[in-house]
Length: 397
Image 1 (cartoon, rainbow, N blue to C red):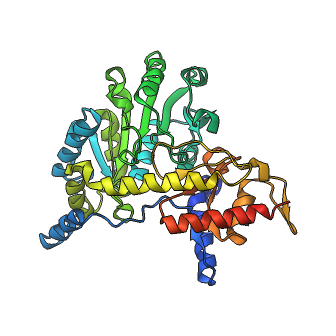
Image 2: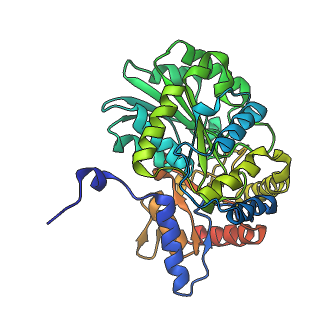
């Protein structure tokens, strides 16, 4: 007897989590695996944030929290949006959730009806398409490649919008490519959006402070788009707080209220201790994570330099986040013994089993000719991983 719903049977397992799981299974067997599949900073949460959490425990913040978040946190996030992003979200327009992932699914559930089209520039974060399809929306994919730094053009955007388009969803800086749209590029896309007022913009800015050459620009700060832009952010990446599970969104009031309604039926409010720690994080000057930002830039430069020594691999030069997204289709169709590399998933399994490096196949991100590497690991691990990858690829004939 099959008790599972059709909905869940259509849902794919997260490829990033799947590859991390397979890597951990090999580790448990005694294999020395370098895991570059997960997007998780290897830094500790800053001490001042941990101190705020300890203080909250001592002051007995151990009771249910308001569904949208503590009033003090909503006010702090409102100030942060204005200070860092020139966004004017009142506290009533902000909802705190158990991670940015929940913020995104809340918005999709609150706005997408069956048959509504959602435009995704590809490559896109692995969960976007699954969330949309889970809610019976239709994914409209705009393909990009390394030659254009994985960015769409205004004409591509114009060509993708139809009468059924309800939402445009993207991350900036991007997971999985690390690419970042400049202010001029976003303003050019904004001119297209101005002609199509029915399109809601959902901007995932979780990597906001992990940028290297330019400061990130929030598309919602464009005055004509502010009333139909939802901005999602959180603490996991910028403050190395993945396990604290704290994300938030700023949205038009009716959407924020709808998200509160949905969250109230699913999880209620986020952790009380995480919220008190979050107040300290969002009130802090972003300069406090400069050391982490500089370390990621150094790792990026190292990884690109090393990867350029691998033949038949094509790269962009990511401006943010902590990912490299190389094009590897040259190796499709090649063999190692009885192993045939048909696609990026096969290649990742081969590199895991032979090279002992865990990576994520690009098909999960809507880009089947690519693989994703996270450089949220030490420089020593990066050097060892690229050496292993290079040796394993050289064995393919």
